[in-house]
Length: 246
Image 1 (tube, rainbow, N blue to C red):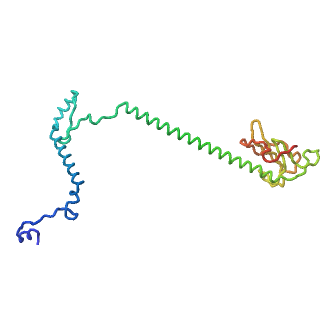
Image 2: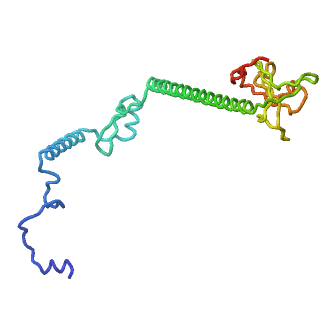
Image 3: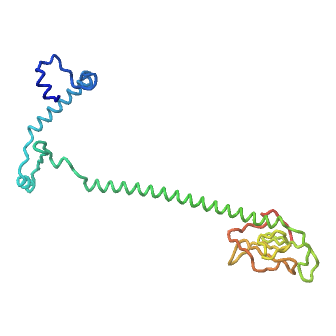
């Protein structure tokens, strides 16, 4: 049976009651009833009445040629949204030149401050890295010298071709010469003993100069070409813990 057939067979009758079309408890309590909701509806109605009065008093949008003539004459132009709401272009003012310059000046000051802070932080980081690298190099060179000194041997030899047999060792404030079984830079061919001279070089290549010479050999501590010159190390050799006279 279709709805039309059902309505044709059932005679119309008056409704005794009509339930509000709300899906919450069959009432309108969700929207009205409490003092706060009633007050909100009253305010909304007042606002609507005020808007209706303003729309009724607003002028109708003139033709385009009339607006153009008013603009050329320097008169204020009233624009209408739709058919009613009026708006003056003077209500939406832009930024003046002074405001733009002021904003750019503030931005420039902020960028300068941020860039200065960044440079200060970068310099502090660079100084820290340089200091850490210097300390690490100093520790490496200290271990380099200590390793050679730990292998000192009481090697007896002629320091001069015609001289007496002596323990091969010489020590001064800025120079130390000795024979070691643990040279810091071993030769390609293994040798048992190596004559080592460590000195503070000056002149064109200042720094710690290390010279090595295989033993046995006459004049083991002669001024041969240095095997290593470290320009960053220039302490007095007495700092390694050996203070002696020749």
